[in-house]
Length: 179
Image (cartoon, rainbow, N blue to C red):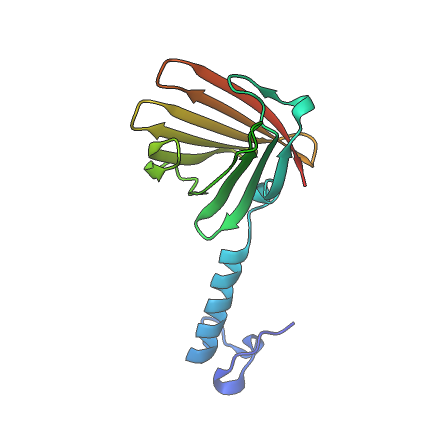
């Protein structure tokens, strides 16, 4: 296949050794825009497996500290700067809560405010299968989420460790199934 250059209607095969290939300004801008768009829209393969909606399997999950909710669902979606992490739950009393945040995956602490925490959040990729999210609240509490792709292709493990201001510690290990 020959690359056709718009300038002088010459192909790259007809260039002399050492002669630079060139293109018209509009063609160069268009090809650069296409290359940039392809780069921005391409999702790394390590992230593709985690993207989607995941629902906790109560029979395979450990939920200590608080009563197990009626429903616990998380979503991970692609974002221009990382990922969007959304957590939806319905408690035993029927109260529904939803929270979402952008994961920049660069380890930098950023301001964060949720219904139960005002402070900072950082997120980072630990390895090709693992992401860690750390929330530190101004009142002294903290929450650590560790997301791991499981050996099974339709499973994800989410470990949640909460340190409460009164000294209590809650640990949850949720096995999530892709919906």
